[in-house]
Length: 189
Image (tube, rainbow, N blue to C red; front, top):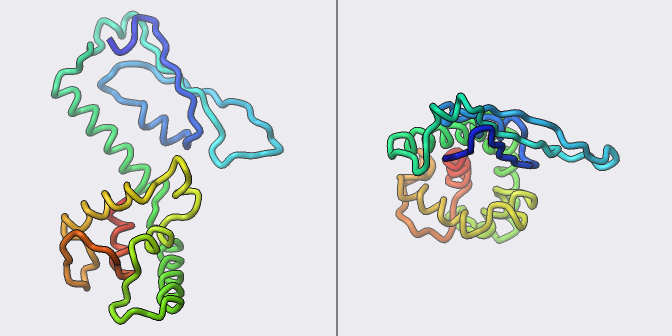
């Protein structure tokens, strides 16, 4: 079973409350969700204060609840719900490709091209693109690393990535144009 009757599963998270609530509110799994803020030092505010998420299953819900291992159809339904919740978060609530971020990437890309002597093809190496697209916090120790970036770029280019105005290029690539970098941001969110 996912939880015993009257069982409680606790999660403490520093992620945005709305995201975790949405992610854990899987209708097919038939449990209730309660959220409690965790007090923090007000002198050191956090961008996402911690919350305690409690998943509970009442005895009545237990009779209707799915058992482990989940049936393939239910597993697919849960996977689809989680993927939809992640997509909702990154496209609606916390998009990566905001107009402000795109303008900043364009500006920084141009500056980097000038600093590197402006290659004739207008491309920057992938490691430089990685630094331009993602701030230090996103690239941090628990963040989005270069290996994950390369994996996502591979998927992007293999799915025909690149700007609409630019010719499609096959993977592997070792550099990108600004238009490709911005198209990747749209793809990645």
